[in-house]
Image 1 (spheres, rainbow, N blue to C red):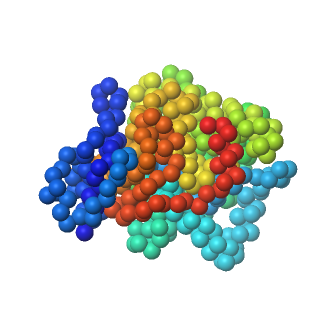
Image 2: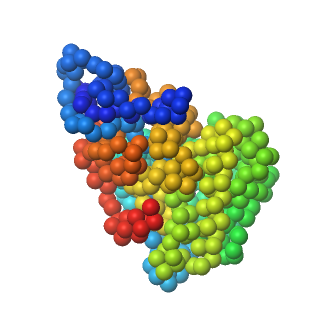
Image 3: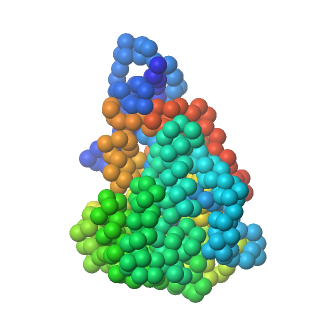
Length: 434
Ligand SMILES: [Zn+2]
C-alpha cells in the first residue's frame, strides 16, 4: 500500500519562465513503493488502495539535496579559549583503536540520520574517516540504518601539511602518489573523489592564508585524470581565486566554497562544464559572530570574512554568467549541525540576492542535476523517487518554514513528525544572525 497526500499546496521544485515556482492548490501526490506514481489534480478513484494523508493546507515539496557534509563531526562549537585541535594527531591515535572507530561509526550514522530528519533526502559527503561513509550508505540502502540517499567520497586526497591532511584526507606528495591514492579510494567504492586544493579557515595561521594553494597543479591534474579514467567526478575544497583557477584548469568538476572569480575563471567554469557549490554556512559564524561568541581566534574571524565574501562573490558571478551553482552546508564544521540545510537555503537568498523560489529550486532540482540525479530526484514528478518534505508554512514567503517539518519521505519511506537531535545552544547563537 502506498500513500496519497491530499489537501495540501504542492511546490514541485521547478521554476516557470518568469522564475516563479507555482503553488498548486488542489493537487495530490500519489506514492507507490519508492516512486511518485502521480502528481496533479486527481480524482478520488486515484486514491483507492492508498493511505490517505490529509495535509490540511500544509506545503509539500521535493526533499532537499545537500552537496557538502562531513559525517565525523557534529558541528559543536569550540569552548572559550580552546586550543586548536590537532586533527592529524587525533586521527593518528584514534584510527589505531577499534573501539574508538566503532564509536565514530555510531556518531557518523547519527549525523546521516539527522540529515534525513531535517529534510535532506539526498546527501553528498565530501571527506570522512576511511570508508565509513560508504559503509553507512550501503547500510542505509539495505534498510539497516536510517539516512538519506548518499553519494560519498569516503576519505579525500590532500598534500603533506594540506587541508585535513592525515585526518579526513590522505597525503599525496607527488602526482604519482595522488593517482595511487585515487586508485586506493576508488577500491573502497565511493561515488565521487574529493581533493583538498587550498588551505581552509580552521588551519590557517596567518591572515589571508585560508585560500593558499597547497596542492601543486600537476598533483591536481594527476588525481583528476585518474579519477575520470575510473569513472568518478571530482569535487575540490578551494578558497582562493588562484585555487579555483588551478582546480578548473586541471579537471575538477565541482568547486566547493569558491572565491571571487575573474573573466578567465568564469570561462574555465564554462569550458569544463563545472559547477560552483556555495557554502555560506561554515564561513558565517567566523565572519559575523563576535569572537566572544564564536570562540574563534581573531585571525579566523578575519579569514572567515575573506572566505565568506569570496563564496558569495563566486556564487553571484557564476549565477550571472549562467554557470550552475549548487548548495551545501559543510555540516560538521563549528556551528554547522547536520540538521541545518534550511539555513544554507536561507543564507543563499539573503546574501546572493535570489528569491526564495530560486533558492528552493537550487536546493532541490539544481543540486540533483549537479549530482547527475535529475532523472531520479529533485522535483515532484511521476516516475521519480518519492523524495519529499512537508512543512506547515509557505517557504516561498518565509524560508524559515523549512526548519521544522511535518513529514519527510525518502524513496517512499515515510517519517512522521521527524525530530532531528538538536543543539539548542548552536540554534540560539545562529538565530541571532539570521
Ligand atoms: Zn568541507
